[in-house]
Length: 142
Figure (spheres, rainbow, N blue to C red):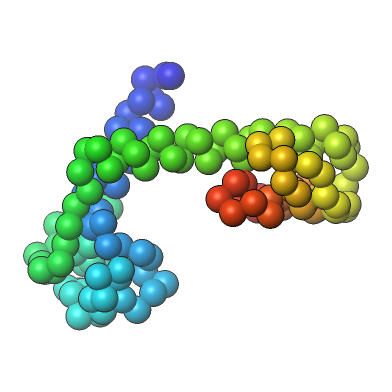
């Protein structure tokens, strides 16, 4: 792994490590602990569940339910992400092998990860949507 990739990975891990375990995305009204996001927002750019982005100041608002992940939890999340990406790459490769350069096509093949059904659609620009019917196997959209 290149030095720049290692630095990017370290920054991403630090950001995940500073993000509350209950954070489930600002598209939701409440976090997984049931705290309404608006009740802890301290102003523009201030979300105590998230670390500040580059150039932002540290948020002075505190959420009593904030709980940061442990190093072991971060390791497990990274392991799961690597495994998930591996399944996606393997499934995408099988679709490319099955369709060649064909565009604007769709169908099903046997999933190379689990042996289940892997549905796909290849768009006119070559982007692939794929979803294995086995829960937790592979699902993506380019």
